[in-house]
Length: 147
Image (cartoon, rainbow, N blue to C red; front, side):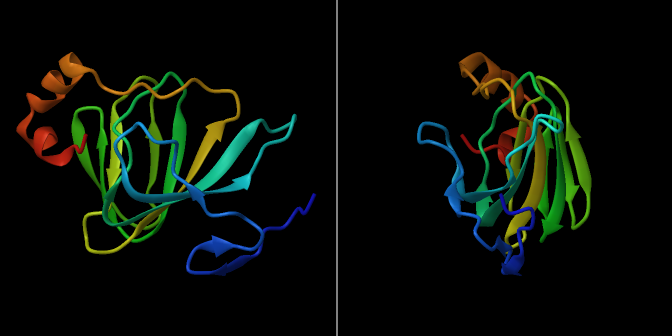
């Protein structure tokens, strides 16, 4: 196993496939995924790089597991619970358990971030009609989210 993944350019790494963000069925737009580290028994985490093209977005979701992201390209915004947060290069954001979150590239530039997550984790939960009604009761969140 190659221990080094050389950065090539334009936020792509040598011998790391550029993957679809996730399977169809959840609302997202213009986002890719690269898995940089697949975990080890002594470090059971997956380290991924996601990139959202200009005006794209991740899925609006929540889950039991926590994860941490670090912005390494561009800027944008994120829904985190009941807040819309401005994101800039090198910001670190912890996403707590069962917290609604969604990332968006909002400044006519890609938003790229590293994401650290446990290998063993639950599947994301998508909002149902009741969840969406509650989220949309906040006008800022209603304007921000994409579903």
